[in-house]
Length: 304
Ligand SMILES: [Zn+2]
Image (tube, rainbow, N blue to C red; front, top):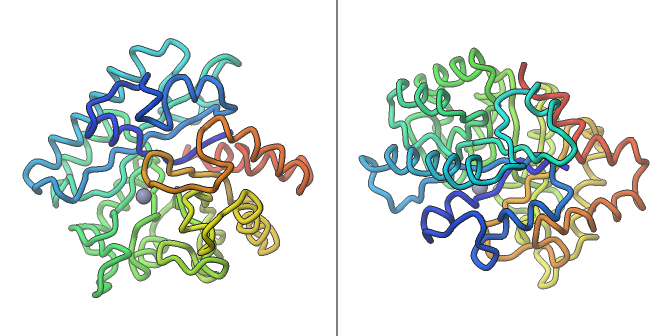
């Protein structure tokens, strides 16, 4: 399986813990080894509390952690920089891809984006929840959409064959970006018409993404799945079935958001639990659809 989003790097940075720490990290070396995960994306997320002048430096520190703690120390974990790397993984290897959650750290400096791409970032979220030089975010009162600088960023990411992640962008920014983006993705979100969370995607957004060859990673975060007190794997599967019925079976996968939230679907709280999800999916869906969601859709759409 492929998991398009986790915040383990942020936790490793903020709590000063190693990738081998099972107590503090949901996505850690041991859990990944015991899971059916073949590719784990690791997001650089810079907390809002970091002053603007320090954000780029913190991003570089998280890049350093990705290499020193994950790539260098774990023999079976291999960095993924392109589709061929992913296809070349040996049976006992696990891929790790560096991603960025929000371009706040670059300010309006394209050279800083170049630097992050040269360091291996292969998926770039344009915003987190609030406005930056690129676009308004999903929680902004005033939705100013994608900026002129943002248009240039999108063109740059197209040229460099980088996924463009719309997970936290504003509604207008979402559609502005889709007009230009060659490789759009929403790494962690669910269906708005089932659970009215502001970050979930409505039918217009789902359809627009499908039309642009985009991909959606369904997330295990409780509040995105259901408003109920107890949220089960069945509630999670409702989002998946809805999207398949909507015609999006070729455009979906998983983006757990582990280590980025406090509460998850009851049965889906660790990378090892991808096994339970896969079993339940096999009961509900034909095997060819299960495989598409587990990994094929993501691989097929990987920018080349
Ligand atoms: Zn997020």
